[in-house]
Image (cartoon, rainbow, N blue to C red; front, side, top):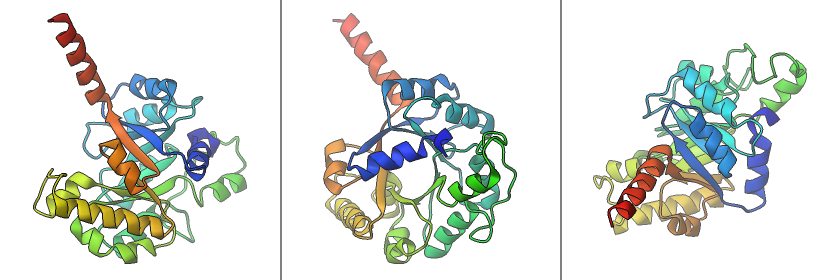
Length: 253
């Protein structure tokens, strides 16, 4: 559905480009509009950790229309009733956190797809342009859109990764380095050799399975070396803080 820039994102990834994104945590839709205008490839609208309502998430999704930026929404949890309302906003992708097994991955995919492949309830609004797109065309597009992004962010998920990667319908795997390090008893110790070994091996396994690989983290060069196809490198709050501090420090010289 071109309304979400899904096709633009997939084309960029297919061309070998590493897509760069901005994490959105503030309610003001101007954040997403700016991300699109600046030239970010996608936004990561975070409903898991940020105080975003479904209404503000909708505004963020709509704000990038007319740009080349694809809106992703991270839902709070892997529950069909939680995912359903986000799907109806017509994002380019849905990021589903804390998926630890093939069974949980299957549940995530089914929540995002209509019968017979899934259990998604059907009441179309924005995704078919409020009725302007023929339902048959919309239904065909909905077989792959929005992209289902599964987050691998615990050592349990890493142990079950082979089975997770065999689940049909997953569009991308997103590595969660912070939570993964925490599940290893080394929260935020991202320079730890064991943590880095697990991250390296997990990324290699995802790529060898032919799956699109993404993350939110830094430094960029480390993740680029690991072969990521997309990465959220900054957030609205970090951008404000870094710029505000730089201006303040300059003024105090």
